[in-house]
Amino acid sequence: MYRVSPLRPRHASRVDRPTSSFTGARDENAAGRTTISDGVVAKVAGIAAREVPGVYALGGGGARAFGAIRDAINATDLTQGVKVEVGETQAAADLTIVVEYPSPIQEVAGNVRAAVAGAISRLVGLEVVEVNVEVNDVHIPGDDSNDDEPSRVS
Image (cartoon, rainbow, N blue to C red; front, side, top):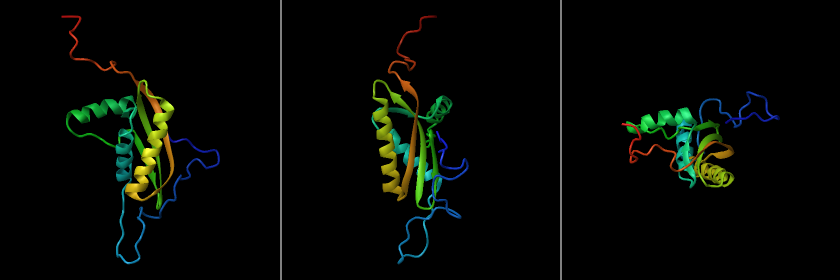
């Protein structure tokens, strides 16, 4: 969740905003430019976060419910629970995660932060200025509805 820094005006950007769209590092010998959309950066962050051990899911309760429907029709949204702000050379990300019990929450959040920052830096080539992780739930194995259990009512 995005929190406003007391040192930054409420609507100030966290990253170095371009005048038009993000352009990657330029090679003086190559003509043209590369534009990477915010959605690509969000997808990279979402994939990296899901690969961290102890992360059960991304997104809040409502987003996960819609995500289950999307999964059922093979339209998985890899950006669920991820918001990014992309500038010319920098990016910032906000993630909402659900941690698997009994994983240490602070450790999982730190690993998510490192994985997301590393993936964005490595794959997209942007400097990551901030990765905020909000843990909004803990998943307890066995909480899922188990279809193998016989119904108690007929």
